Every structure is written in structure tokens, then in C-alpha cells.
Length: 314
Ligand code: TUI
Image (tube, rainbow, N blue to C red; front, side, top):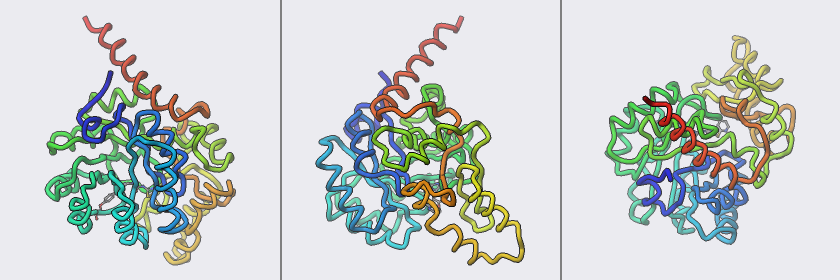
């Protein structure tokens, strides 16, 4: 069975993290993934700090397995969340969209395992020097806020540069992608898009249907002009957003106002003017199924690909 040092570090059966997707990753999804033997994560992006606290407490009722919280560092309430997770006794934190260095001392004193998302070798090295326990190296195939480098060259360069475990993210959706990530030297994988259609994922049915209908060319990256590139499904919203970005008459403030709240509208209301963040691999997502089946398909699928390939070697 594929296991790694990240399983021992966290006390999980399978080296599979569920992406801490903003507005999406709640107690329902996180507990289902943790109960399946992976690491479920609750997003800090929800209806405020107290709503996230509530999800943590709910998750604890729904699983006795390890789970974590993902902290979106650019959110206005990031420092409030950083304190709240200590009060709640959260054991594992992942962070995204920035550097968690200023919180490291208090988190480590609280005995928390800290695993930041990084999108470059330089940041990964800085994080290791700051004392993080592992990193998630995320390529630009992933959904939501993305860096510049893609998974295939990013993972081996980060693996070569660090001693701590590396979790690969971005474009991993089935056993083949998982096997590839392990071949690149990763100690684990993080998957977001495929969990959007987990039975236990509470997003609006319209969001799930859009992912299930997606093809290879269904996603696009907008927001580069704002310095915050975001990958999402091509929709009337993403087209209007791209048009505004290309129009010199439209101010950055107008673009920001147009984008604000768009992800929540997609997740909660299935609104056609929402932002349907998605990874590039949405075209590989075929059906709605329990999180347990997704976790097992990723790992057992990887094992199958690897052993079938081994039998082709002469
Ligand atoms: O954070 C993500 N993905 C996200 S956050 C998000 S919430 C959102 N809502 C509305 C509009 C836009 C976003 C949706 N998706 N992934 C983790 C990630 N982190 N990817 C890249 C990075 C990253 C980038 C730069 C991490 C650190 C970093 O360093 C900056 C620094 O301070 O050195």
C-alpha cells in the first residue's frame, strides 16, 4: 500500500489531503475525507471567524480521525483565525496565498503541525528554514488562486531543495495523476476539484453539474492584471471579468468590486454570475460519489498504474 512519512507524521492511513477550498471545505466534506483515511481540511474562508469555529466543532462530532484547517492568509480576518485555531485545539494547519512566518512561533508553541502551500522553490526553502513540518507544492493547474509554475517541473525541484515531506497539488485527479506525483518524489497528494463532486460536498448542485460537464478546455485564468491570478470555469462571469481587465477604461477598484463575493454566490446559490473556481483537471471528473470512493480510487488507482507499468518493463 502507498504510505509515506506524512502518514506517520499526521496519523492518517492514506497520504491524501483534501484541498481547503474557500467557502466549500466545511465539516461535512472534511469529516468524510478524514473518515476515509485521508486528511480532511476546513477552509477559513466562510461566513466569518465564528462560523469557522462552528465547523471545527461540528467536524469533531463527525470524526475521531485527524483533520485540519486551511488558513487563507490574504483574508482580512486571517490573524483572528490564527488565534481561534489555537483556542480550538486544532492539530494541523495548512496555509495559502502568502507566508505564515509571522504566526509560526505561536502555532509551534501550541504543538500545531504547520504545512504551508508554496508555489516556488525559494518560498519552500524559506518555509523549511522557518520550521514548518512539510509543504504543499501547488502547480498552476490547480483551481482558485494560482502561482506561475506548473506541477510537473515544480514538484521535483522542491523535492530536491527540501528535506521535509512535500505534498504535490495541482492537476491531480485520479490514480494516474497520483502515481505521477509519487514518481516525481512527492510524499503525498492534495486534491481539490474532484472533491467538489463528493456526495458529502455541500456546494450547490449547479456547481457540481458544471464540473461534471467540463472538458479539457473548460478553465481559464483571470485576475493577472490585479496580481491575483485565479483559475475558474469559463462562464459569462469569467468572460466579463476578462473583458473588464482588458479595458483600460475600467479601474482596478471596479474590477475588485465586480469579483467580490462571486465565489460565495457560485458555491451557495449556483448563481450564473458567480465564480466557479476549478482546477484544470475538471474534464477528468466523471461522477458524483462518496469521498471514501474518491480517496480509495486515488490510492488504489495509483497502485494499479504503478504495478501495471512495472510489468511492462523488460
Ligand atoms: O490559496 C490558494 N488558493 C485559493 S485561495 C482562494 S480564496 C479567493 N477568493 C476570492 C478570490 C480569490 C481567492 C481561492 N483559491 N492556493 C494556495 C496557494 N498559495 N497557491 C499559491 C500560493 C502562494 C502564493 C504566493 C503561497 C505563497 C505565496 O507567497 C507570497 C509571499 O508572501 O511570499
